[in-house]
Length: 79
Length: 413
Image (cartoon, rainbow over all chains, first blue to last red; front, side):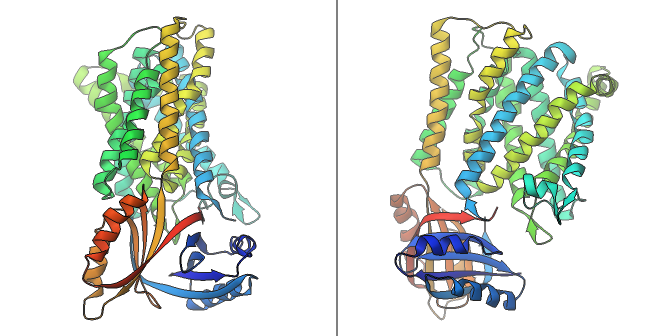
Protein backbone atom coordinates (compact mmCIF):
# COMPACT_ATOMS: atom_id res chain seq x y z
CA UNK A 1 0.00 0.00 0.00
CA UNK A 2 1.27 3.47 -0.85
CA UNK A 3 0.06 6.33 1.32
CA UNK A 4 0.51 9.97 0.41
CA UNK A 5 -0.56 13.50 1.20
CA UNK A 6 -1.59 15.62 -1.76
CA UNK A 7 -1.40 19.34 -1.06
CA UNK A 8 -3.56 21.40 -3.37
CA UNK A 9 -4.01 25.07 -4.17
CA UNK A 10 -7.39 26.16 -5.54
CA UNK A 11 -8.57 29.00 -7.74
CA UNK A 12 -10.40 31.61 -5.67
CA UNK A 13 -14.20 31.17 -5.80
CA UNK A 14 -14.12 27.54 -6.89
CA UNK A 15 -13.34 25.81 -3.60
CA UNK A 16 -16.86 24.47 -2.88
CA UNK A 17 -17.34 22.85 -6.28
CA UNK A 18 -13.76 21.50 -6.32
CA UNK A 19 -14.17 19.90 -2.86
CA UNK A 20 -17.49 18.36 -3.97
CA UNK A 21 -15.67 16.74 -6.91
CA UNK A 22 -12.80 15.54 -4.67
CA UNK A 23 -15.27 13.79 -2.34
CA UNK A 24 -16.34 11.56 -5.25
CA UNK A 25 -12.82 10.18 -5.80
CA UNK A 26 -12.10 6.69 -4.48
CA UNK A 27 -9.06 5.80 -2.30
CA UNK A 28 -9.11 9.21 -0.61
CA UNK A 29 -8.95 8.71 3.19
CA UNK A 30 -9.54 12.30 4.19
CA UNK A 31 -10.03 15.77 2.76
CA UNK A 32 -9.14 18.75 4.94
CA UNK A 33 -9.78 22.37 4.06
CA UNK A 34 -6.92 24.30 5.63
CA UNK A 35 -5.84 27.90 6.19
CA UNK A 36 -2.28 28.74 5.12
CA UNK A 37 -0.07 28.19 2.10
CA UNK A 38 -2.32 25.44 0.69
CA UNK A 39 -6.10 25.23 0.45
CA UNK A 40 -6.96 21.53 0.66
CA UNK A 41 -4.92 18.58 1.95
CA UNK A 42 -5.93 15.08 0.83
CA UNK A 43 -4.69 11.90 2.37
CA UNK A 44 -4.78 9.00 -0.08
CA UNK A 45 -4.05 5.30 -0.01
CA UNK A 46 -3.41 3.39 -3.25
CA UNK A 47 -2.03 0.00 -4.27
CA UNK A 48 0.76 1.19 -6.59
CA UNK A 49 2.59 4.27 -7.83
CA UNK A 50 0.71 3.92 -11.10
CA UNK A 51 -2.59 4.20 -9.21
CA UNK A 52 -1.21 7.27 -7.42
CA UNK A 53 -0.50 8.82 -10.79
CA UNK A 54 -4.06 8.03 -11.95
CA UNK A 55 -5.48 9.58 -8.78
CA UNK A 56 -3.34 12.72 -9.12
CA UNK A 57 -4.41 12.92 -12.73
CA UNK A 58 -8.08 12.76 -11.72
CA UNK A 59 -7.49 15.56 -9.23
CA UNK A 60 -5.78 17.74 -11.80
CA UNK A 61 -8.76 17.32 -14.14
CA UNK A 62 -11.05 18.96 -11.58
CA UNK A 63 -11.99 22.50 -12.51
CA UNK A 64 -10.72 24.89 -9.83
CA UNK A 65 -7.53 23.06 -8.86
CA UNK A 66 -4.55 25.26 -9.64
CA UNK A 67 -1.63 23.17 -8.38
CA UNK A 68 -0.97 19.87 -6.62
CA UNK A 69 2.11 18.73 -4.66
CA UNK A 70 2.36 15.04 -3.74
CA UNK A 71 4.24 13.94 -0.63
CA UNK A 72 4.61 10.14 -0.53
CA UNK A 73 4.76 8.70 3.02
CA UNK A 74 7.88 6.61 3.68
CA UNK A 75 7.26 5.91 7.36
CA UNK A 76 4.48 6.81 9.73
CA UNK A 77 3.64 6.66 13.42
CA UNK A 78 0.00 7.16 14.30
CA UNK A 79 -2.31 6.71 17.26
CA UNK B 1 -18.92 9.27 -0.73
CA UNK B 2 -17.35 11.15 2.17
CA UNK B 3 -19.42 12.80 4.83
CA UNK B 4 -18.43 15.08 7.71
CA UNK B 5 -16.97 12.69 10.24
CA UNK B 6 -18.55 14.74 13.04
CA UNK B 7 -22.13 14.21 11.82
CA UNK B 8 -21.74 10.47 11.27
CA UNK B 9 -20.18 10.20 14.71
CA UNK B 10 -23.15 11.87 16.40
CA UNK B 11 -25.72 9.88 14.39
CA UNK B 12 -24.02 6.61 15.35
CA UNK B 13 -23.51 7.47 19.01
CA UNK B 14 -27.08 8.75 19.48
CA UNK B 15 -28.66 5.78 17.64
CA UNK B 16 -26.62 3.50 19.87
CA UNK B 17 -27.91 5.41 22.95
CA UNK B 18 -31.57 5.14 21.96
CA UNK B 19 -31.25 1.39 21.35
CA UNK B 20 -29.32 1.00 24.64
CA UNK B 21 -32.17 2.74 26.51
CA UNK B 22 -34.68 0.37 24.93
CA UNK B 23 -32.45 -2.60 25.83
CA UNK B 24 -32.27 -1.47 29.47
CA UNK B 25 -36.08 -1.40 29.66
CA UNK B 26 -36.28 -4.92 28.17
CA UNK B 27 -33.55 -6.08 30.60
CA UNK B 28 -35.42 -4.57 33.55
CA UNK B 29 -38.57 -6.38 32.48
CA UNK B 30 -36.76 -9.72 32.09
CA UNK B 31 -34.87 -9.44 35.39
CA UNK B 32 -38.03 -8.48 37.22
CA UNK B 33 -40.43 -11.12 35.87
CA UNK B 34 -38.59 -13.76 33.80
CA UNK B 35 -35.00 -14.49 34.98
CA UNK B 36 -34.48 -12.85 38.37
CA UNK B 37 -30.92 -14.01 39.12
CA UNK B 38 -28.20 -11.81 37.48
CA UNK B 39 -25.68 -14.70 37.08
CA UNK B 40 -28.18 -16.93 35.31
CA UNK B 41 -29.40 -14.00 33.18
CA UNK B 42 -25.79 -13.03 32.19
CA UNK B 43 -24.92 -16.56 31.09
CA UNK B 44 -28.12 -17.02 29.13
CA UNK B 45 -27.58 -13.57 27.51
CA UNK B 46 -24.25 -14.66 26.04
CA UNK B 47 -25.37 -18.20 25.13
CA UNK B 48 -28.38 -16.85 23.24
CA UNK B 49 -26.22 -13.89 22.14
CA UNK B 50 -23.89 -16.16 20.16
CA UNK B 51 -26.81 -17.66 18.22
CA UNK B 52 -28.48 -14.29 17.59
CA UNK B 53 -25.23 -12.49 16.66
CA UNK B 54 -24.26 -15.36 14.35
CA UNK B 55 -27.67 -15.24 12.65
CA UNK B 56 -27.59 -11.43 12.21
CA UNK B 57 -23.95 -11.46 11.02
CA UNK B 58 -24.69 -14.20 8.47
CA UNK B 59 -27.73 -12.28 7.27
CA UNK B 60 -25.59 -9.14 6.91
CA UNK B 61 -22.99 -11.17 4.95
CA UNK B 62 -25.47 -11.79 2.09
CA UNK B 63 -24.03 -10.19 -1.05
CA UNK B 64 -26.13 -7.57 -2.81
CA UNK B 65 -24.76 -6.22 -6.12
CA UNK B 66 -21.20 -7.21 -5.22
CA UNK B 67 -21.29 -5.74 -1.69
CA UNK B 68 -22.49 -7.34 1.53
CA UNK B 69 -25.79 -6.20 3.03
CA UNK B 70 -23.91 -5.18 6.21
CA UNK B 71 -21.53 -2.93 4.30
CA UNK B 72 -24.48 -1.13 2.69
CA UNK B 73 -26.53 -0.52 5.80
CA UNK B 74 -24.15 -0.60 8.77
CA UNK B 75 -20.39 -0.54 8.25
CA UNK B 76 -18.74 -0.02 4.83
CA UNK B 77 -15.67 -1.97 6.04
CA UNK B 78 -17.73 -5.15 6.51
CA UNK B 79 -17.30 -7.87 3.89
CA UNK B 80 -18.45 -11.08 5.55
CA UNK B 81 -18.23 -12.96 8.84
CA UNK B 82 -14.65 -14.23 9.11
CA UNK B 83 -12.26 -16.06 11.42
CA UNK B 84 -10.02 -14.00 13.69
CA UNK B 85 -6.47 -12.98 12.77
CA UNK B 86 -3.77 -13.81 15.29
CA UNK B 87 -3.05 -10.12 16.08
CA UNK B 88 -6.71 -9.53 17.05
CA UNK B 89 -6.95 -12.35 19.61
CA UNK B 90 -5.24 -10.63 22.57
CA UNK B 91 -7.50 -7.56 22.23
CA UNK B 92 -10.58 -9.80 21.91
CA UNK B 93 -9.57 -11.69 25.07
CA UNK B 94 -9.39 -8.43 27.04
CA UNK B 95 -12.55 -6.90 25.53
CA UNK B 96 -14.45 -10.19 26.09
CA UNK B 97 -13.34 -10.32 29.71
CA UNK B 98 -14.42 -6.68 30.17
CA UNK B 99 -17.84 -7.39 28.66
CA UNK B 100 -18.40 -10.50 30.81
CA UNK B 101 -17.63 -8.68 34.08
CA UNK B 102 -19.56 -5.61 32.97
CA UNK B 103 -22.68 -7.62 32.12
CA UNK B 104 -22.73 -9.54 35.39
CA UNK B 105 -22.23 -6.24 37.29
CA UNK B 106 -24.90 -4.41 35.30
CA UNK B 107 -27.50 -7.15 35.70
CA UNK B 108 -26.73 -7.41 39.45
CA UNK B 109 -27.32 -3.67 39.73
CA UNK B 110 -30.54 -3.93 37.77
CA UNK B 111 -31.77 -6.71 40.08
CA UNK B 112 -31.01 -4.51 43.13
CA UNK B 113 -32.42 -1.22 41.83
CA UNK B 114 -35.02 -2.31 39.27
CA UNK B 115 -35.45 1.04 37.49
CA UNK B 116 -33.12 1.42 34.44
CA UNK B 117 -33.32 5.23 34.59
CA UNK B 118 -31.50 4.95 37.94
CA UNK B 119 -28.99 2.28 36.87
CA UNK B 120 -27.72 3.82 33.64
CA UNK B 121 -26.65 7.32 34.82
CA UNK B 122 -24.25 5.76 37.34
CA UNK B 123 -22.28 4.11 34.59
CA UNK B 124 -21.73 7.46 32.84
CA UNK B 125 -19.08 8.27 35.44
CA UNK B 126 -16.89 5.88 33.46
CA UNK B 127 -15.93 8.94 31.42
CA UNK B 128 -13.57 10.02 34.21
CA UNK B 129 -11.79 6.66 34.11
CA UNK B 130 -11.50 6.90 30.33
CA UNK B 131 -10.08 10.42 30.44
CA UNK B 132 -7.43 9.34 32.93
CA UNK B 133 -6.54 6.31 30.81
CA UNK B 134 -6.39 8.36 27.61
CA UNK B 135 -4.02 10.78 29.31
CA UNK B 136 -1.69 7.86 29.90
CA UNK B 137 -2.12 5.85 26.70
CA UNK B 138 -2.56 8.70 24.20
CA UNK B 139 0.03 10.90 25.93
CA UNK B 140 -2.53 13.66 25.97
CA UNK B 141 -3.10 15.61 29.18
CA UNK B 142 -6.77 16.50 29.61
CA UNK B 143 -7.38 20.22 29.14
CA UNK B 144 -9.45 22.39 31.42
CA UNK B 145 -12.44 22.07 29.06
CA UNK B 146 -12.21 18.27 29.15
CA UNK B 147 -12.03 18.22 32.93
CA UNK B 148 -14.84 20.79 33.17
CA UNK B 149 -17.09 18.83 30.81
CA UNK B 150 -16.33 15.51 32.52
CA UNK B 151 -17.13 16.94 35.95
CA UNK B 152 -20.38 18.42 34.58
CA UNK B 153 -21.35 15.05 33.06
CA UNK B 154 -20.43 13.25 36.28
CA UNK B 155 -22.42 15.51 38.59
CA UNK B 156 -25.27 15.44 36.12
CA UNK B 157 -25.16 11.65 36.11
CA UNK B 158 -25.16 11.49 39.90
CA UNK B 159 -28.18 13.81 40.12
CA UNK B 160 -29.88 11.99 37.25
CA UNK B 161 -29.38 8.67 38.97
CA UNK B 162 -31.31 9.66 42.08
CA UNK B 163 -34.10 7.17 42.25
CA UNK B 164 -37.53 8.73 42.01
CA UNK B 165 -38.56 6.32 44.72
CA UNK B 166 -36.02 8.22 46.86
CA UNK B 167 -33.56 5.42 47.62
CA UNK B 168 -29.78 5.35 47.42
CA UNK B 169 -27.93 2.10 47.88
CA UNK B 170 -24.28 1.71 49.00
CA UNK B 171 -23.96 -1.82 47.59
CA UNK B 172 -25.02 -0.59 44.16
CA UNK B 173 -22.49 2.29 44.27
CA UNK B 174 -19.71 -0.20 45.06
CA UNK B 175 -20.76 -2.38 42.11
CA UNK B 176 -20.65 0.67 39.81
CA UNK B 177 -17.28 2.05 40.90
CA UNK B 178 -15.38 -1.18 41.46
CA UNK B 179 -16.85 -3.57 38.91
CA UNK B 180 -18.93 -2.01 36.13
CA UNK B 181 -16.87 1.09 35.34
CA UNK B 182 -13.38 -0.49 35.29
CA UNK B 183 -14.76 -3.40 33.20
CA UNK B 184 -16.43 -0.95 30.82
CA UNK B 185 -13.09 0.89 30.38
CA UNK B 186 -11.26 -2.31 29.44
CA UNK B 187 -14.12 -3.27 27.13
CA UNK B 188 -14.31 0.05 25.27
CA UNK B 189 -10.55 0.70 25.01
CA UNK B 190 -9.83 -2.70 23.45
CA UNK B 191 -12.85 -2.51 21.15
CA UNK B 192 -11.51 0.84 19.93
CA UNK B 193 -8.08 -0.71 19.34
CA UNK B 194 -9.75 -3.49 17.34
CA UNK B 195 -11.77 -1.00 15.28
CA UNK B 196 -8.65 0.99 14.39
CA UNK B 197 -6.79 -2.14 13.18
CA UNK B 198 -6.39 -2.89 9.50
CA UNK B 199 -7.31 -6.43 8.43
CA UNK B 200 -6.39 -7.52 4.89
CA UNK B 201 -5.72 -3.92 3.91
CA UNK B 202 -9.07 -2.54 5.10
CA UNK B 203 -10.42 -1.16 8.36
CA UNK B 204 -11.65 -3.76 10.83
CA UNK B 205 -15.47 -3.86 10.87
CA UNK B 206 -17.89 -3.42 13.76
CA UNK B 207 -19.97 -6.52 12.92
CA UNK B 208 -17.10 -9.03 13.19
CA UNK B 209 -15.82 -7.26 16.31
CA UNK B 210 -19.24 -7.55 17.99
CA UNK B 211 -19.76 -11.20 17.03
CA UNK B 212 -16.36 -12.30 18.33
CA UNK B 213 -16.75 -10.16 21.44
CA UNK B 214 -19.94 -12.06 22.33
CA UNK B 215 -18.12 -15.37 21.80
CA UNK B 216 -15.22 -14.40 24.10
CA UNK B 217 -17.57 -12.80 26.67
CA UNK B 218 -19.59 -16.05 26.73
CA UNK B 219 -16.44 -18.07 27.46
CA UNK B 220 -15.43 -15.73 30.30
CA UNK B 221 -18.98 -15.61 31.74
CA UNK B 222 -19.11 -19.43 31.73
CA UNK B 223 -15.75 -19.52 33.57
CA UNK B 224 -16.95 -16.95 36.16
CA UNK B 225 -20.27 -18.81 36.65
CA UNK B 226 -18.40 -22.11 37.05
CA UNK B 227 -16.13 -20.51 39.66
CA UNK B 228 -19.19 -19.16 41.48
CA UNK B 229 -20.82 -22.62 41.37
CA UNK B 230 -17.66 -24.21 42.69
CA UNK B 231 -17.07 -21.71 45.51
CA UNK B 232 -20.67 -21.07 46.57
CA UNK B 233 -22.19 -24.47 45.84
CA UNK B 234 -24.72 -23.08 43.38
CA UNK B 235 -25.99 -24.59 40.11
CA UNK B 236 -26.00 -21.43 37.97
CA UNK B 237 -24.34 -23.09 34.97
CA UNK B 238 -27.14 -25.60 34.41
CA UNK B 239 -29.76 -23.00 35.36
CA UNK B 240 -28.24 -20.59 32.83
CA UNK B 241 -28.39 -23.17 30.03
CA UNK B 242 -31.98 -24.07 31.00
CA UNK B 243 -32.99 -20.36 31.07
CA UNK B 244 -31.48 -19.85 27.59
CA UNK B 245 -33.76 -22.60 26.25
CA UNK B 246 -36.90 -21.80 28.28
CA UNK B 247 -36.80 -18.02 27.79
CA UNK B 248 -35.14 -17.93 24.37
CA UNK B 249 -37.61 -15.37 22.97
CA UNK B 250 -37.06 -12.80 25.74
CA UNK B 251 -33.29 -13.15 25.81
CA UNK B 252 -33.00 -13.11 22.02
CA UNK B 253 -35.01 -9.86 21.95
CA UNK B 254 -32.56 -8.11 24.29
CA UNK B 255 -29.49 -9.61 22.59
CA UNK B 256 -30.73 -8.74 19.09
CA UNK B 257 -31.22 -5.10 20.12
CA UNK B 258 -27.89 -5.08 21.99
CA UNK B 259 -26.13 -6.32 18.84
CA UNK B 260 -27.18 -3.20 16.92
CA UNK B 261 -26.56 -0.87 19.86
CA UNK B 262 -22.97 -2.12 20.13
CA UNK B 263 -22.29 -2.24 16.40
CA UNK B 264 -23.17 1.48 16.20
CA UNK B 265 -21.17 2.15 19.36
CA UNK B 266 -18.08 0.37 17.98
CA UNK B 267 -18.33 2.35 14.74
CA UNK B 268 -18.57 5.59 16.70
CA UNK B 269 -15.54 4.50 18.76
CA UNK B 270 -13.54 4.15 15.54
CA UNK B 271 -14.28 7.80 14.78
CA UNK B 272 -13.95 9.66 18.08
CA UNK B 273 -11.93 9.30 21.27
CA UNK B 274 -13.36 6.72 23.67
CA UNK B 275 -14.18 9.40 26.27
CA UNK B 276 -16.04 11.62 23.79
CA UNK B 277 -18.05 8.67 22.47
CA UNK B 278 -18.90 7.84 26.06
CA UNK B 279 -19.98 11.44 26.67
CA UNK B 280 -22.39 11.35 23.73
CA UNK B 281 -23.63 7.97 24.78
CA UNK B 282 -24.42 9.49 28.17
CA UNK B 283 -27.58 10.75 26.48
CA UNK B 284 -28.94 7.23 27.12
CA UNK B 285 -29.88 8.68 30.53
CA UNK B 286 -32.27 10.96 28.72
CA UNK B 287 -33.77 8.30 26.48
CA UNK B 288 -34.29 5.81 29.33
CA UNK B 289 -36.89 7.97 31.08
CA UNK B 290 -39.82 7.32 28.69
CA UNK B 291 -39.04 3.59 28.78
CA UNK B 292 -38.87 3.62 32.59
CA UNK B 293 -42.21 5.46 32.75
CA UNK B 294 -43.70 2.83 30.47
CA UNK B 295 -42.55 -0.19 32.50
CA UNK B 296 -43.54 1.55 35.75
CA UNK B 297 -46.98 2.17 34.23
CA UNK B 298 -47.19 -1.56 33.41
CA UNK B 299 -46.35 -2.30 37.08
CA UNK B 300 -43.12 -4.15 36.15
CA UNK B 301 -41.07 -1.84 38.42
CA UNK B 302 -42.30 0.20 41.43
CA UNK B 303 -44.14 3.41 40.45
CA UNK B 304 -42.32 6.77 40.62
CA UNK B 305 -42.67 9.44 43.27
CA UNK B 306 -44.27 12.66 42.16
CA UNK B 307 -42.27 14.74 44.67
CA UNK B 308 -41.42 17.95 42.74
CA UNK B 309 -37.96 18.25 44.44
CA UNK B 310 -36.97 14.79 43.21
CA UNK B 311 -38.23 15.51 39.71
CA UNK B 312 -36.38 18.85 39.68
CA UNK B 313 -33.11 17.22 40.79
CA UNK B 314 -33.39 14.56 38.09
CA UNK B 315 -34.15 17.23 35.50
CA UNK B 316 -31.10 19.33 36.56
CA UNK B 317 -28.98 16.16 36.32
CA UNK B 318 -30.07 15.53 32.76
CA UNK B 319 -29.47 19.17 31.73
CA UNK B 320 -25.93 18.97 33.18
CA UNK B 321 -25.20 15.73 31.26
CA UNK B 322 -26.34 17.32 27.99
CA UNK B 323 -24.37 20.55 28.65
CA UNK B 324 -21.23 18.57 29.43
CA UNK B 325 -21.57 16.67 26.17
CA UNK B 326 -22.11 19.82 24.09
CA UNK B 327 -19.07 21.59 25.53
CA UNK B 328 -16.98 18.49 24.83
CA UNK B 329 -18.06 18.45 21.23
CA UNK B 330 -17.56 22.11 20.42
CA UNK B 331 -13.92 22.52 21.40
CA UNK B 332 -11.40 20.75 19.23
CA UNK B 333 -8.71 22.33 17.04
CA UNK B 334 -6.89 20.22 14.45
CA UNK B 335 -3.94 21.23 12.26
CA UNK B 336 -1.23 19.98 9.96
CA UNK B 337 2.38 21.04 10.49
CA UNK B 338 4.76 20.75 7.53
CA UNK B 339 8.36 20.38 8.61
CA UNK B 340 11.67 20.71 6.78
CA UNK B 341 14.52 18.84 8.47
CA UNK B 342 18.15 19.90 8.92
CA UNK B 343 20.74 17.72 7.21
CA UNK B 344 23.28 15.89 9.34
CA UNK B 345 20.79 14.82 12.02
CA UNK B 346 19.21 11.33 11.77
CA UNK B 347 15.58 11.44 10.57
CA UNK B 348 14.58 8.65 13.03
CA UNK B 349 15.78 10.73 15.98
CA UNK B 350 13.75 13.78 14.91
CA UNK B 351 10.74 11.52 14.22
CA UNK B 352 10.82 10.14 17.77
CA UNK B 353 11.17 13.63 19.26
CA UNK B 354 8.16 14.94 17.28
CA UNK B 355 6.09 11.88 18.25
CA UNK B 356 6.81 12.55 21.94
CA UNK B 357 5.03 15.92 21.79
CA UNK B 358 1.61 15.73 23.47
CA UNK B 359 -1.30 16.29 21.07
CA UNK B 360 0.50 14.81 18.02
CA UNK B 361 -1.81 12.21 16.49
CA UNK B 362 0.36 11.18 13.54
CA UNK B 363 3.83 11.86 12.13
CA UNK B 364 4.71 10.89 8.57
CA UNK B 365 8.15 10.99 6.99
CA UNK B 366 7.56 12.02 3.39
CA UNK B 367 9.34 12.54 0.10
CA UNK B 368 9.06 15.89 -1.66
CA UNK B 369 9.06 19.49 -0.52
CA UNK B 370 8.64 18.65 3.20
CA UNK B 371 10.37 15.99 5.28
CA UNK B 372 7.65 15.49 7.90
CA UNK B 373 3.89 15.98 7.86
CA UNK B 374 2.52 16.08 11.38
CA UNK B 375 -1.15 16.06 12.38
CA UNK B 376 -2.06 17.52 15.74
CA UNK B 377 -5.16 17.82 17.90
CA UNK B 378 -5.58 20.32 20.69
CA UNK B 379 -8.48 21.78 22.67
CA UNK B 380 -7.42 25.42 22.22
CA UNK B 381 -5.00 27.37 20.01
CA UNK B 382 -3.24 28.69 23.11
CA UNK B 383 -2.48 25.11 24.17
CA UNK B 384 -1.36 24.44 20.59
CA UNK B 385 1.28 27.15 20.97
CA UNK B 386 2.29 26.33 24.53
CA UNK B 387 2.44 22.58 24.22
CA UNK B 388 3.24 21.93 20.57
CA UNK B 389 5.00 24.87 18.87
CA UNK B 390 7.33 25.57 21.81
CA UNK B 391 8.34 21.90 21.96
CA UNK B 392 8.76 21.77 18.18
CA UNK B 393 11.05 24.81 18.20
CA UNK B 394 13.23 23.06 20.74
CA UNK B 395 13.94 20.09 18.45
CA UNK B 396 17.42 20.39 16.96
CA UNK B 397 16.70 18.51 13.72
CA UNK B 398 13.99 20.93 12.56
CA UNK B 399 14.98 23.69 10.13
CA UNK B 400 11.58 25.20 9.38
CA UNK B 401 7.90 24.51 9.92
CA UNK B 402 4.55 25.71 8.58
CA UNK B 403 1.28 25.49 10.53
CA UNK B 404 -1.90 24.86 8.54
CA UNK B 405 -5.09 24.98 10.66
CA UNK B 406 -7.82 22.58 9.54
CA UNK B 407 -11.04 24.49 8.99
CA UNK B 408 -13.27 21.60 7.92
CA UNK B 409 -12.62 17.92 7.33
CA UNK B 410 -14.23 14.89 5.66
CA UNK B 411 -13.06 11.36 6.22
CA UNK B 412 -13.76 7.98 4.64
CA UNK B 413 -15.13 5.84 7.45
